[in-house]
Image 1 (tube, helix red, strand yellow):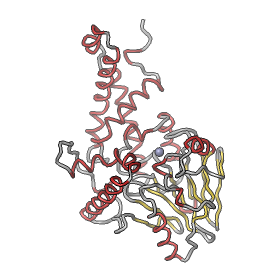
Image 2: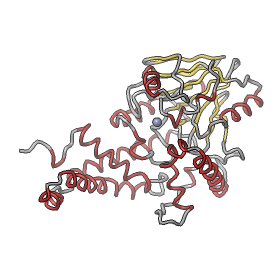
Image 3: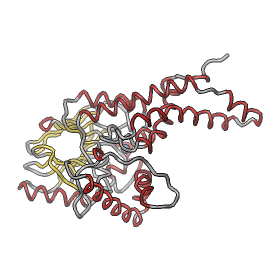
Image 4: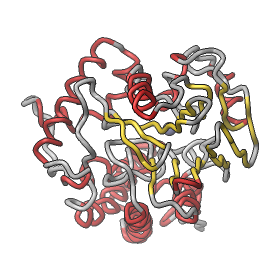
Length: 363
Ligand SMILES: [Zn+2]
């Protein structure tokens, strides 16, 4: 985590080239990666794409190896692996490996990483248990590369959603739970808990008590602003609350599931502040942006959707502007995804919280 920034940049460029070639060969990977890679593409190609503020070096993680991944020890028998866009976590035990998530962009490098570590620490290298953080394909879409005898563990809702999806790359879990589940394998422990819907209805918290490490995916993005549309979350109030739930665990290391580095508690506090600032700014914008000019422009044509499209764009713009200003240089890609995040926050303020601005009860 203390590599020279230039090395990190070079390694991230290498990772980008690797991922870009994967994306070209596999259409589904291209679809998954399209959004996440657009910022990198901007710098690489002189084709009119926008430039963005430099990514602070503190946002990058360790350099990748020549296979395009990094695997490192968190503490004792707990390890993490990243391709600098996605992350998985695994525990080596006396009886086999417990893996949490199988992101398809890391793919077979998961096996290489596990093999490398278990050969070095003398533990059995076979993955016996696979925990799903949530049902999304971009985090567990490589779970099919594991043996059909692997014990798959997930929330009951994960099971239901995966049965509905019928994706052969994401076999449904065979062991499910509702609220909490303690997984004990070969002397190691993971505590799984569902605290209600957030990013998805089934997203769980995975805590390794002996290593003071929490894995919760698509909630906190150490060093970066959340992925667009507040991490494409289905329940925004639930997603915001998930930050507080995460911070109540006594973790010292966070595995967020994305990008190239682990999180510390300051990352959690900083993202809470970003989300809080976004909500405060959304309230101010909703109170101040006038609806009248949009009615005057589009009202006479009877185009109600045009009125609201441009009114909400103005509210989103006013919400995003001060937040982009505050966080540029602090959180990576503040100028990339804050507008998209503001759009979802203003919408949630309107329909979830009920702050309707000029569209409240009237007359
Ligand atoms: Zn997700």
